[in-house]
Length: 308
Length: 289
Image 1 (spheres, chains in turn red, cyan):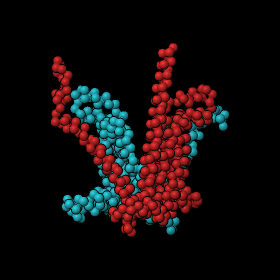
Image 2: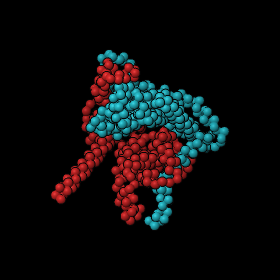
Image 3: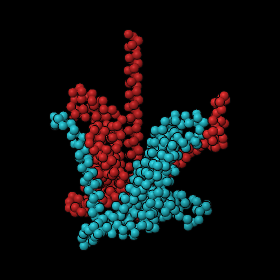
Image 4: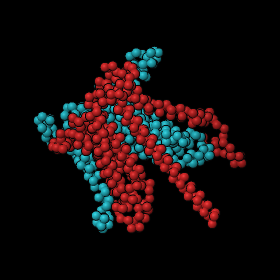
């Protein structure tokens, strides 16, 4: 096929006229890919839409699997379902605490990996990757065997503390990966300049490194928070009698979850989407402001040069 | 402290690493060892447990007894991985090559559904796929499907649920690898009279393979260990190994068998990773030349 398309010497270099398959490919490229993408997004969003829709359902004593009628009842009485408020509170508490601890520990590891050369760096990289490659069920199950084998407080009986231990554990690697990705984009010369100007390690960190990595740390924190608040599998193995929000959903899943759970799910979804939207808009504004500033400086410099 | 750090610069990285790594050693490595020890226990919660190397029979017993669940996990995991690939590739391709200024918005729309609870998403599928639900109800009404047709509580629903829930793990790595491709390579191929299909087959697709490879692993590993989809969308004949592990651990308190099963799962995944890396690695090298 390649041979027939090789242009003859002396003939002008023109493209061969498109065959039928070529025309199909063009049609595919121009229209079908977008139509497909539209369908894919509908498919991706469908369960979220159903979840939000069924928060307005009036199950009338039946399980919340079939549409019965519209009501705002669940939105007005979110915590009318016994146990839901406590479960959401516990989930928030664990998510906040595990995010703070895991983000701190993970950021320190990321700093070591991205800013220092030391023996065992490759091994550490591999080791950080392992918990992310282990199925959740194995992570949860192995922690359970450890807690059972120790058999003494604070590890046994299982409690809020054991859930927290587990969540910090699985979050550390995700934080390391996120912060390191941010750091690897920045050369070290800013830090070197600060040190050359006489700043010590702590001042350099406070004034240079930390502001640089802050967006990465925030992103890592957001990721850790969302992983923690949504975790069911590992929590189920380490919770004992403690009921988090996902465990509350699971317990109700067989008999049909009350619409109030859909309300909480919808609120979580909207807050996450809102947070991402706000941070995107803020960073875009910042970028535009920076650009405008740079342009103004450039014009001023040019004007000054002209005047001189 | 500043003085100490200046005098012992080489200590700094280890000080930074220590807290996090100690946490991971205590709550990732040590539990792994403990699970191995537990898998060689005999006895029950009531009578107490005893460790003996001869209890390696726990493994053979677990493997023979729960082989159907193991094979189902492999089958469902592989099917879901293939499906996520089929769905994700055109999607990632469109966003990377035709997204234009909507690239970030499209990417956001792909990820946004996963900001909600995993369980709630799966329960939503239960509503959508229900016997008289949004999808099947109208089709049955107009007589396109027989009344007794069902998707829920079948292997199809389980695989569909797994496919949906792990989709971004496939889409994002493929997108990243496609996005990195230098578009001039494709243009060069077309200037050299390659057809669009030819350019895709010989340039774009081979260059996106690292993303496909990473995506397949990121999807297959959690898919094989999953039990929520089988639990919520399946029936007792579609249980996967995860269902058995959770049941043995949390309901039966049969820690030795459950630990042996977890270890076999882990070994199976490592084996699958190794085989896959070999197959794709050698194939890719031969095909690329």
